[in-house]
Length: 147
Image (spheres, one colour):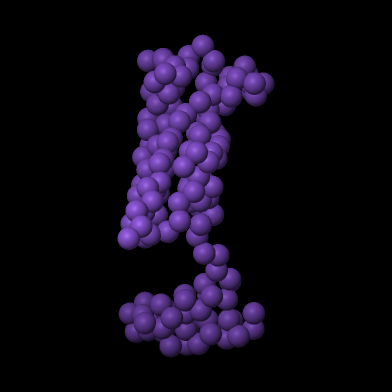
């Protein structure tokens, strides 16, 4: 019987000193590492270089902006850990890129307009007499047939 393969996950927050913004701040980046494979995610936050504590992966400041940044970093880290846990529970493959895609919401199945409209019509059909009339649902069906 083979050994169960464990996925090692590391989430690290860094600043990109080489890519300073026009206001002089450095963008904050999240580095996701799974089994030594890396994916980087820009978290759309920035901070002055001298206010970043790399050892603690957070802002040194005590002002409102620094506290909000630290809270956001903790929220993002929790979301990544939740994504990893859900992938493990669902027994799906786990890579840094898959976690990155899930973080950005690119893992969701894309549905067509017709599929969404058909689902809408089914829900409306179930509500005939409560929220919709028969003629309204018939008009919805006519609309989908003409698309």
